[in-house]
Image 1: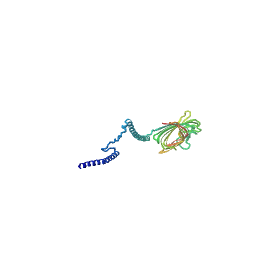
Image 2: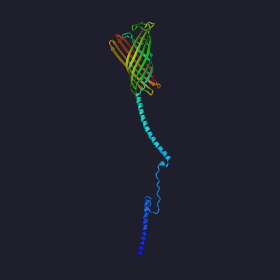
Image 3: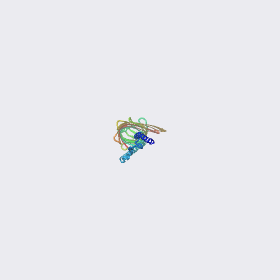
Image 4: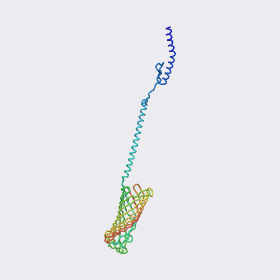
Length: 354
């Protein structure tokens, strides 16, 4: 009886194992499947182990192709550095260019090179005028150049002018010119000139030399496409020497008169083309001075116009017409000295510029 009970217990245990073993196997298979989905790991006690997934590690491009990619990387880095350097150098060069332009423009404004103009001239003049016979300036006391002295109607006048621009708007200038008149006459009636008698019908010769010296300062008032306007201020000096010589070596009379004419002058230049323009000028002077028995009255008027044209870079030509009138009267202790001179004529001027 007892033995049956034990066999019954053993057989019951075996039955339980048979019933529970499939359940455990099914649960284990389900667990293995979930583990494979999650990470590929098989639980302990499974029949076979799954092969692990091989994960390739990331490799650096430099390690993958050490020769090619390293050189490209270096070139890229060098190119970036070169571009940055070029950009910095470009900005620096721009600043340097601006600074240099500023310096050069400022230097041009401050630095001015004086310019010199040399003007030789030759004029055909037609003078007229008179001289005092003696020390009396009353009526009928003058000798006319042509009617009484028989002086020539025309003469050549030579001149030289030097002008220097000391600034863009102003400068200084000097000029001198000279012409002389000669003539021969037989007076119809006796003629007395400063105490020397010239008998009627006896020929005598006359020579009158006129030397002009001029100094001035000029200033440019306006310069534009319409034209250029300048002003001058200065002094004209006239030295006149008259020599009357009797024929046959009978003696001569020499009289000299000098006078100063402070003046103001206006000049204008109007362009006619790329290398030519029209010049006009007007000059006026008046001086009245008196002290005690000494008195001096000087007047001067000059008008001129001309055509100016460029011949080359350093040469310029001018064809002009001028009219000038000078009158000077001095009295000292009742003695009078007078000169009246009017000149008009055409002139040709050659200007050399440096």
